Image 1 (cartoon, rainbow over the protein chains, first blue to last red):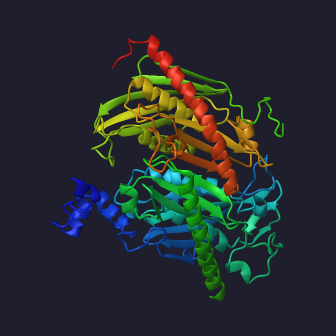
Image 2: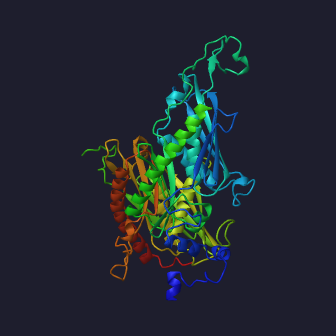
Image 3: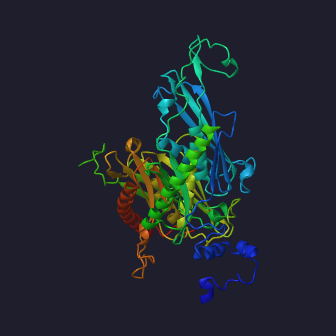
Length: 304
Length: 243
């Protein structure tokens, strides 16, 4: 019994590794943690390989494909002209929707919306709006008359853990890729979008927003999800790890390391101050990494 | 005073709390919790046989239904449901009634700020009223960061909207144990210092977050005593409530 408490005599020597992994998932992971390594050969505090491609959807005004390990998110922004609300006549608006189609995970059934989708959706819009990354005034066209409505849709193509981090990365990348369409006022005082076909002809009316085609992004938020299990902190968990060790903590820091969100919805483990500080330190490191990845993706885009 | 509050409270002053249990006749357990003008009623039904799909049948399943004051429930309500569900899962002894579902219905009566903490406190009292086995109670509190860097407790709706940032925190209540160090964990830190749930809105410095945690923890200890006393009172004068 004493030996089994140490995790040494737990049938692991008698059965195949795959069988042990399925039958005793928690013990399988804990034996890895004892050796400070994870089943996918990562150290505990290291995030998976991350890649980012801008302009993945040609028909959208701004889009990005983000991959963290095998978690894949596709984000696209569609711009529409709307009449701004009375209370905020010179501000535009953003609407963020997160979708989890049945393709992304065996847990999601077609037809029935996934439980996690509206929650991630809400978290994303809270984070993006409260981080102050976007100045909604930049989305204004004619004060009180017309402003941009940005529809940001994020599709999860492969859900393998840390959904929020990947979705947030895809969302900010899509905003940094966003090219606002050129519009002009026609004779009736209505806004019309300059279409590509009519570019050759001499436009009748002057475009309203010729110079401001890009949004200025200030203090971009980046997220890192960690698992707290006993005294271990596992950065950027996979779906398997998330299902076995249930205490998740998501920290969002912006580029100047201000705390945008610290989200820990319950879970069996309690978060003590030293653990939270360690998680914040990991996120700081991660913000640097993601910042570089985003800048490289933007550079690649400009070269093309 | 550095911070002027519209209702004349000091920064560390919570609004008066009223907790009544057994308010609903048909529910297995119920409680209403009011913090100033914010009021929530929670009802517990269960444990009923069987768990929902995608839930572990070897454990008890917790289901939370959030009813807003008016209108249909949308994304914010879904998020509240999820936070509440995960928070309650962490305080319930899920192995006592495996393969059962306990439903908690939250009805918002009035929202005047700190709604989620209020609902968590109400749900907790309702679970006690229903006799659902719990590890410990959870006490929830809302802290606000003012522009000037001060922290105020338990904001009203208006204060919440005008704040730089606010934090919802849930702490376990202190366990009165037979063992002298019952509530200490091996590391030497008291259990009630651990955070069960943390939800933040708005940008703040990391140090500001920790000062919120510190103040919230002190307020949670007070609340925890209040809950303990109110539960004792009720247990004394209503022996008929069984099963």
